[in-house]
Image 1: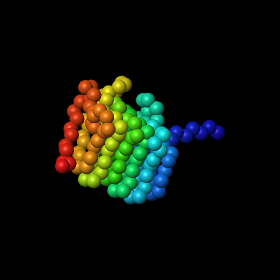
Image 2 (image 1 turned 120 degrees about the vertical axis):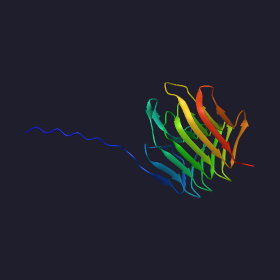
Image 3 (image 1 turned 180 degrees about the vertical axis):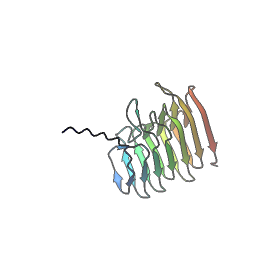
Image 4 (image 1 turned 90 degrees about the vertical axis):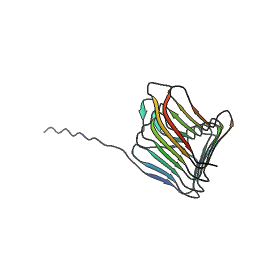
Length: 174
């Protein structure tokens, strides 16, 4: 008797944070990470606290990150790291911050949408949002819609490297 079985799994797991979490959250393909009001993903000694990749070349596509009002993601650098992601969506109604550089790092990312709602903040000591092509993939098609505050203590609030293409920024903030 001889039996061969083949299984093909697509992993997708939604996750919701309601309290305080201090460990890294690895985003999953085609899933949603929600930080609910009053919740936080925070560790200012940890880089990439919300990580959209496992290792170079092993991207996470179709992930969504939602930060509700009175909720936060706070890390050391690259608080949200969307490395080699495709179709990453970030909707912020709370706070995304990095104590050093890059609250959101879109390295080699494509088709990303960031919405920073009224009253929301995205901040870092250096370069709050960065899009760059630093590897084998293009950095392209990023749309940022801001109705809140995007700021940096030093350098730029938003930095699109020269190799980042097809970027759109709409600022509705007053």
